[in-house]
Image 1 (cartoon, rainbow, N blue to C red):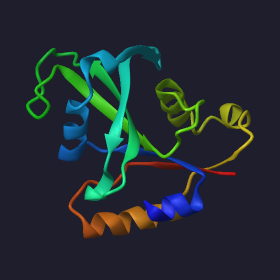
Image 2: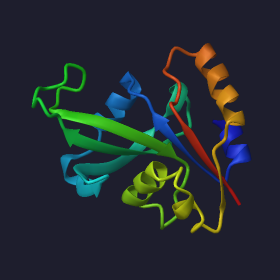
Image 3: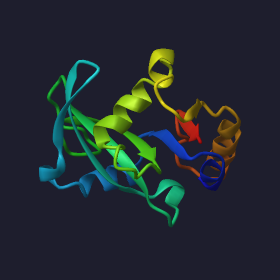
Length: 150
């Protein structure tokens, strides 16, 4: 994470499901979940502190949950929802939960990225860092990294 912070003004990382993520999601009060429409799907979003790689520094995890189509309760979470999360260090006022989610989802759309005054970089070089971190820890590796440099 230190390398991402050194080289990126803001980063956005998809968090793979893990026990630490499930524990963080359980701490989100039910009143914090807000309805949203993402990719034409009704979801609920909230955020929570998240400590990646069992670290001591917390980052913001924006979590979206969607009712499971089969309406079964998940064996790990004990809830009828599927969860998806994005970790970021962006705490600016514009970085609402919906903004971060939509920005992350649209990261490859050149029309959208040209709007931002900040240069958008998909950091392939940072991938090697995360592969190394994964090698040293048993936690799942992030599935994608989006990095902004000013």
